[in-house]
Amino acid sequence: MNYYVDIKLEGDTEITLGFIWQKVYTQMHLALVELKDENNTVDIGFSFPLYNNHPFPLGDVLRVFANSKERLDELNLTKWLNRLDGYVYVGETKDIPTNVKEYVCFSRKQFKSDAEVRRLSKRYAERNGVSEEEALNMLKPAEKKYAKLKAKNKLPFVNIKSLSNGHPIKIFIVKKEVEVEEKDVFSTYGLSNFSTLPWF
Image (tube, rainbow, N blue to C red):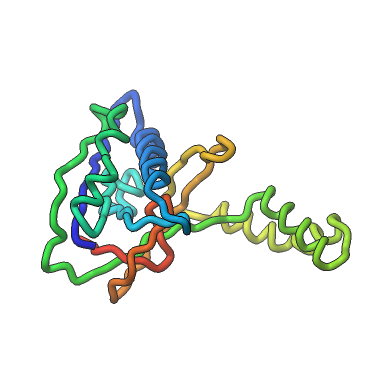
């Protein structure tokens, strides 16, 4: 990645930072959906330079990376964020600092929901010739384990609405430090399990 833009979010007494994050992230997701390739991936990544900051765990800056200024221009941040004027400030496109020595990977952590467990049990039943109830009982220990993990989870997250069904979903975000810069393939949430971003 060679260029970046910082998006600064500002809440106030009436509108919380969490609410602004929800609006910004939804708009950014929509913007990336327009740029996705046939594999549903993009070459634009998101970083959270104030990750695990107090009082809001994602901080108040979303850093957007691309390999060229033209790609960031194509993203057209002002178009996607213009309705949030007064709460969101889009900075100038800048070169990545030349002295960067650290890289990070921001990925999404997903926990299985009740609907997912039911879907998995149905598939298991079809494949193994058992009833759905038997399959569900076999998966119950895993369901309980995931429920406990989700309850204990302290990961920073953003609430957004699903584009497919309009239901609220939480995007839990994990930061991992890595030693080597790797290829630039990101989801339409700007996240990746393996693609890295400069950390500064």
